[in-house]
Image 1 (cartoon, rainbow, N blue to C red):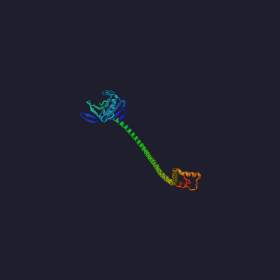
Image 2 (image 1 turned 45 degrees about the horizontal axis):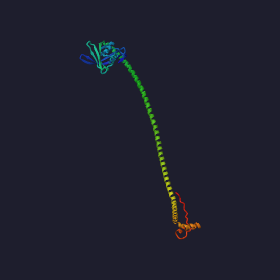
Image 3 (image 1 turned 90 degrees about the vertical axis):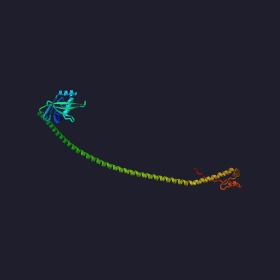
Image 4 (image 1 turned 60 degrees about the vertical axis):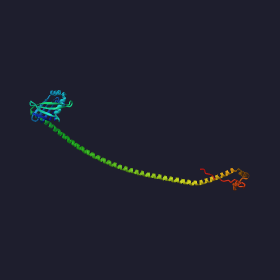
Length: 316
């Protein structure tokens, strides 16, 4: 407990009596001058409830300790304040009796820089127990009153925080419900839109399949029509080519007969002389039958050359 530049601590000490050591509880009231934050001297009032002792840590004492420990004055006062304003766990406090019936409070200070233990010995002197105890009790009662006021203030603040927290929780619950409803409505709308899009996709898929079937059927019909028209054209060409072939065969036969006759005439040029003379004297009549082939092969006189009408040959 502390108030201003004063503190009160409860220390568990080991008291040495003759050859035995017992545990004892001491109440230590500390006064730090000029301020608790930056003290240069201090004083202690110690009591066990029955007896009382005091100690004066003047500036000269603090400087002496600083010189012995090779430390700064501020470091010494800071360490003493750390160990005397609150009982530190793991630290052994010893309270022993001296020859002149006084007491000595000692404890070890750990120096982290040098890893050494510095022992503090505070020589206590006997004091009027009633005065020390009354002063200590008054300080404790005053501190208790302040702590009670602080506790009640903290309780009121806590109640206010609870009310605010309750209101915030209700608001949060309302917001959460509204969020759930909003999500639900949004999900319902989304599901409706999604189902409509899926149905539209199915309709488009069916329409696409139907159009593909119609296109495939149309292609098959066109293919069948083209196949049938090509077969009809081939048949017509076969039919038209038959009389043409016959006509060509007749023309070829006539040509061959003429060639054979011309060859016979060329082989026997004398046979053509009477015929040439007769043609010069009397031209042959076209309406009478000609016996030229017979005149050429027999003894009968040559009367004329039988002429044949050639049929025109179609050029392909």
